[in-house]
Image (cartoon, rainbow over all chains, first blue to last red; front, side, top):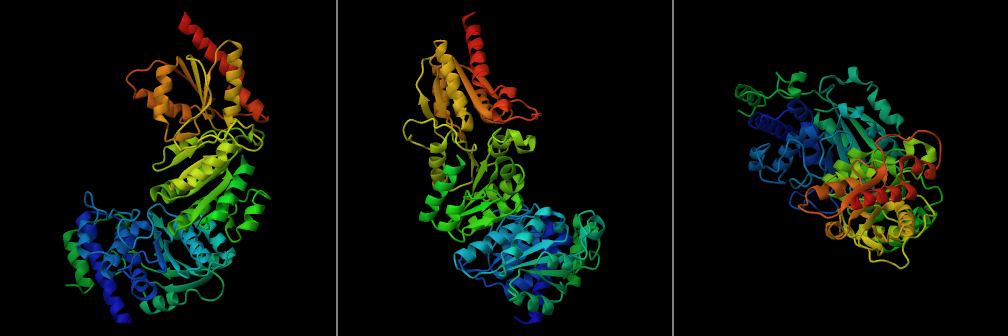
Length: 271
Length: 311
């Protein structure tokens, strides 16, 4: 798919997320907006998937380890055709299968329930090893947050994957520079982040996580034939796409008003 | 129990190619036969129980039948959240096997005691908790756990425990096994590696003219409620024995069940570890004695209660 089309899709997904947050009064808007380009690049360009056959054995797997960005995943899956878009309107409402963090098997396309941080890479390694044992050559992509790099289990997984040369696997760090209550680099010594992954035996690439050209190019390069798992440090902006939300951590929890939804949609070119 | 676990797992894995073994840097030589006969299906996950458990869940999500294995306290409590979310929330066929139940590794100190694991595991939705009473039950429990197809915790002792069965019993998850017929006064319900103590208690009671019934309650969750209904209506005293804290374990689960019953005949006595860490060096026998998991103590307590009945 052409880059321009991917960018348009990303704007539409962002508009839907802002709507969903307003409608359901759900938090984590900033975190959802920062990873939209990553998800759009994956679902329309990288992943070998068929929305009509969501359980096909040979499909590539994707795990949103930063489960709090569920709105981004749900909107992406719906737009990609995994389930009807009108289901998104039920997000967070009583009895809906779309909870504020993805639950097991909630909708086709969700490979794993997430919400507590630091679980996705281990789950992904398990999936990748299962593929290796069963001789099914799918790939596993996992998006984690920078805050998630606080979790010890993230680094347990990192050390295991490289020793076992799990090269059909890619972790994308949505490095939006914020976690719930502050600058991620002030809370834990994250930097030099790419160097950390390299020193754990991974191939690490640093890119602008909103540059669709770079994203698609880098994601297409998995496995990168180094014999190592791949880490992509995607430099992103929390709240990306809406001027009043960009790089303002209040939007980790803030809910947009009706007026702010309109403003967002205008800025995204959807009105 | 651990040798039987390793040999049974190897036998089962030869039949079922989906079986994989994840070990937390433990079991040196124990799994040599598994490694040799099931190449590529043994993973030393290092001292990283959280990742080991998440990986097992990921494997199960893709059709494998993983077993995680290390010391009981580490394979449960250390990675409790990974078990809760990755295994139980997804309701996956992951078998979690802990070696060194209760005070099996008493000499290694309280870091290696496992007297809270039953409590932690049994509160998790979808989890089945099995504490085999001897090597025969280990073999049967493992096979049953693979057939079960959901999360199962199997709590092993150490090695060379006495065999409590004369013949191969019928093993069914959630169904206690009668080990020794008794009179109508005392029923002893034991779970797991403490079964030899339970049998010794029955022997001591016999010297006082009391023929106690003995049941191996290998499954703590789900509880054998049919059996409980029977024994609480037939006997005067029902005693639970476990090498686990009195809080939250087998005896607690029986007490919870009992609190929901309208009528009962029997008194419940619970024997297990106190709500405290055990200090001071010593092996399993000493540690058991220090907390009252000992046939002499248990039989005296039962006799005292019986005395109270006749007064």
